[in-house]
Length: 41
Image (cartoon, rainbow, N blue to C red):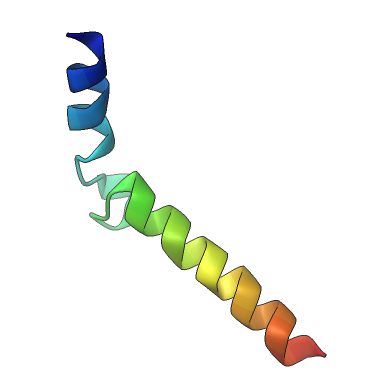
């Protein structure tokens, strides 16, 4: 089904993301933003 294909593609590591999955890259980005805001104050 289409949802299964989307899940498979979204869980695939990407060369452009340093061989991280999109979710891993997003988590790193969010953590860096949260940490940056927390330490800027």
